[in-house]
Length: 211
Image (cartoon, rainbow, N blue to C red; front, side):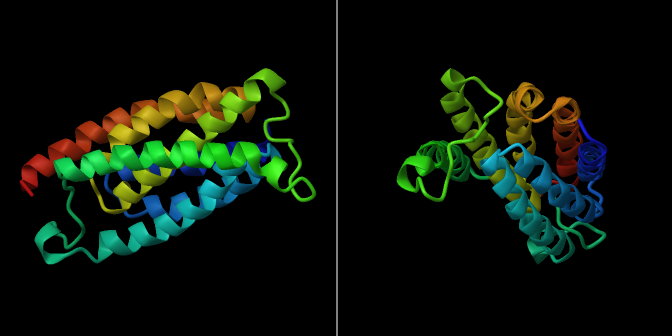
């Protein structure tokens, strides 16, 4: 546990609260939080989650643009992006994408030290007993893959992003308590509640506009 990690958790939590309320500040706050968490995950050698923070940073920039420059057919009265749903085909594609990304990334991450022994050392999750490290790598890969998809859908303001976040946070909370630290684990436990809150709030907002 460190002051730096606690501050990162606070910024990230505030970003999610703003997202639930459809406030544009979710993206600047998110950029600060992801930038700080890059170093938190780096210190724990959680490389998938560390790399995810860089993509999160870029997606926050993309989301900031999309929410303030919506297409004409998906615009709220205040000229910001409206909440919409994915089509059935895109929902299926979303699930398939998460599965494929998870197993691909997990396989690559777990074998990097074998493919490039002179560059990569097998120190991933070194604080976890050897028999469980392989499982941790694939859990980390799932968190990376599903979070990436969820953040992209949030940038597009798709309601389904909250469903994915709830699934991710339910697994992330105990995983991060074990591998990263208590503040991060508590943060992701709180995210389960904010995810459910966000799903309910966004669905009500969508129904009002009927887009």
